[in-house]
Image (cartoon, rainbow, N blue to C red):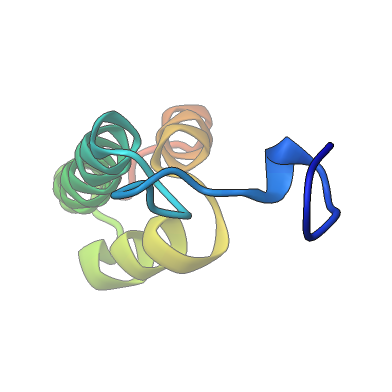
Length: 81
């Protein structure tokens, strides 16, 4: 018979933490770095096509993913003459 009630699932072991594990945190960090590098690549490609690098960098960083921004840039014609 157990005193105190409750299930064993709710009892935490000593040293056990809630939230992300080390591997999940590392994966999240790499994903964040890849996203940021992708936005820089989008800005570079935009400048090479004669578009606003800052605008495309901010678009890919905040509004859409870098991959979608690169696809959109590939579909647009170059402004260079």
